[in-house]
Structure formats: C-alpha cells, structure tokens
Length: 111
Image 1 (cartoon, one colour):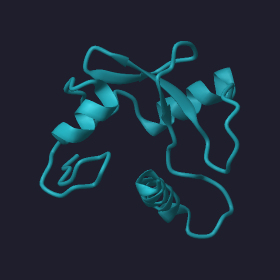
Image 2 (cartoon, rainbow, N blue to C red):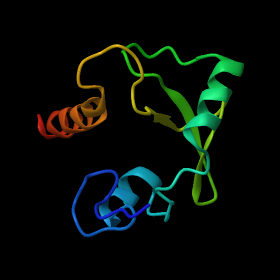
Image 3 (cartoon, helix red, strand yellow):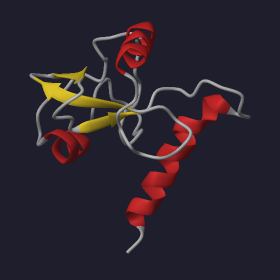
C-alpha cells in the first residue's frame, strides 16, 4: 500500500501518521497505518462473534486495541473503533468513510 498522506488528518506527504496525529491518537508512539488483517479476516470474525458494539449508524464497526506498534481486532479492552468501507444497498458507499472523516474534522474545529 502506497500511502501519500497521513491516514488520520489526510495531510499530504506522509507514509504513516504525522507527528501531530501520532501524539493525539497514540501518545506519540509510531503505529503502522497498515492493519494486520484483511477484509475477509474481519468479515469472518464479525460473523463468528457478531457485532457487540452499541454505536448506531449505517457503517459496521469493530473494536481495536493497540498491541506494540499495531492495531488489532479485539472484543475486550478496545481503544479505537474501526469503520471499514460500507457494504449494502446505499448510494455513494465508497464516499461514506471520507464524508464522515471530513465531517468529524469540521466538528473538531467548532467551539
């Protein structure tokens, strides 16, 4: 995967999380933006364990925890929420994660 922007704030010119995002998300720790599982792995685990998060919305969600420098799927002790690309019968599915990201970035700027 060739990342040309910070995966959190989308600033161009980064192959990993920028220093500002590393600080705010991971306490400054270097964490790989590449997840150690595939979408099929995620789908199998979700089918086997079901969705136990009680966060509303269209997108499926799964709990992640930080293990060394890697984010891993977990059922307990999650520190982060993974929202993979949406599957289903909705318009503009491919734009949903980016739309939510931009919306949250705008919300962050409000007093």
